[in-house]
Image (cartoon, rainbow, N blue to C red):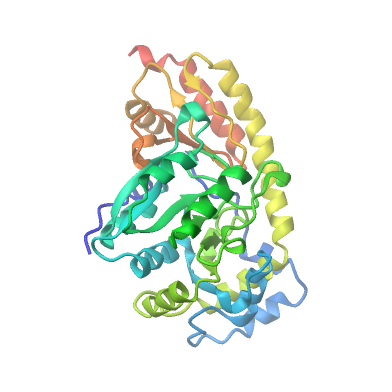
Length: 373
Ligand SMILES: Cc1ncc(COP(=O)(O)O)c(C=O)c1O
């Protein structure tokens, strides 16, 4: 296996615990263990009784029952639980691709979606989202890219880093094109339920397509990244079995306390997602004001979903800008190169409660005339 460094994670390794304001994180505001236990009477006692032996490799039945409720057609035994979404991505790519296979990957992207496909032996074609189209994907581009050896198409909606939410018609086209050719559709849906208008929510890919695999996690909309609980949902038994067999070489099974906490949290997932959606909307209003005040310096494509967006810096080098902002003002923005973008964009995150203070600090930095040094 030949894996290149995960640039975003290396970037966070350098800055995450030394920079005061993380204005580029993709997860939403978290909560304490006590907050999760307070969601239900008796939860504290239940946690104390958790048996710390190995757990069922596919995920505890009670947790899989809760996860299955997110979907309309998925049974608990069609859910495979993982250590975060990250493990699921890794295992999916190694389950699907052999050397010589071809993958189409939504780009720019969260790097593991392309890098683990490549490391599993696939030749990767980038299905490019373009800023001038509101970061939309074009299904005609997909048609042109497919080859006889294309095994899977990898998409991410709502999207990291752009905040793009695919429209229902394009999703239907993608489902039709892939299904007709027997190609697996892998849909990273980790920001699902964070649509700014819930009416815009797409059906999960796995509900409309027997070959598709939907990816979910507790980290983003529900703000519980520290539980490290993610999953895939799929009717595709062949992929499910292969991923389950590969999991024997990675985590084997999940953390027993995390499984219980995840189960409790998911019983309240609508409330948790609503809380974070409200935070995201409040923060977006602050960003709208900020970008309007600095319209000459930034192009601001307002996203329709998720907790991140991908504005462009105008007339200055984005790498130098982000570096100086972190070192001199203690505010972290993530340059687009971390997502395979060369267009002078950066990722801004708005799922955290301290965003107003971070934006204030950013604005002070800009007021200091940083660009004329
Ligand atoms: C699109 C996407 N997929 C998967 C993940 C991985 O999620 P987790 O860190 O919870 O495993 C992330 C995390 O940022 C992401 O943005």
